[in-house]
Length: 151
Image (tube, rainbow, N blue to C red):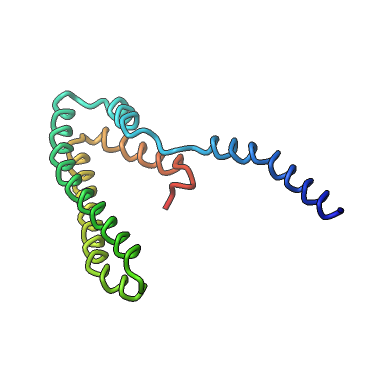
């Protein structure tokens, strides 16, 4: 009888505290909207129309290449997942997925390289004052980044 009462009490206690867990989760900061960040950066850097057009052109070219990479990465992840689900032996699954995993590493490196090229191209379009302000913005963003998104 005591066990039933204690169990009922613990279940009630747990269930009554569950909403507080979900509220805490709702209050965690999320990843900011990239469009909002771009507007903020554009405004703070006081970009000229010419700079905006050059940046837009560079981004569009980069975006096409990045979409191809991401599409291929998604395909490879699905392929790996399928192999692990269908293969009875983990060892065999590891062997069969090794080439896919190697290609994923290469694709990730290519994506990182594209991001760096894109950032450098962007920074090369800025004048000295804008570069200084952009460094301040990057520093602020690093400091304000939610801890669950930090590397």
